[in-house]
View 1 (cartoon, rainbow, N blue to C red):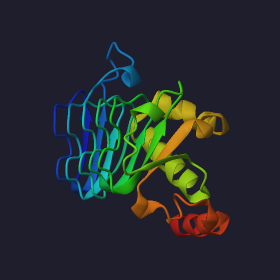
View 2 (cartoon, one colour):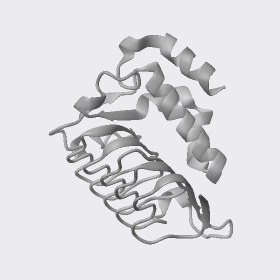
View 3 (cartoon, rainbow, N blue to C red):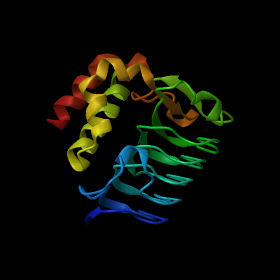
Length: 202
């Protein structure tokens, strides 16, 4: 099932989602800048086991809490982003609140940090924070942003892709121990893995 919402949503968007796709974007007639406004509520993607969520705008608190396998792109979040996450992939193209990745034991997160304020907000009890150095991780990040732009028309995502070489070094990757030896997080896998993934996706 695919759902497209023009407007705003409340709490628990995509709770328990097991597949399909949800796209949320403001109306074209809105009077605010989407990436500066909160358009979905708290606890989105709670317990999701699959599917994709694209949000043109910010989310409230506890975004992707207990996310297991879903993929998501959002343009900012409140506190406790990726809390207790066990799988999947989350991309945040804006600012986040405090206590990021508390209890995160699986999956990966990519967070854009344009003003160099992210590191103190990350709960480092479990996860490691590193730049996106693995070619496969770079590909994963770029492809999710491309999908986000295609689905939502995001101006923020478009700007990132247009100046990819400028923005890529501004992303942090959050890596729990379970993901340290994956191609997405470990640069030792090299470009050959990227080539196989690209051919497989074509």
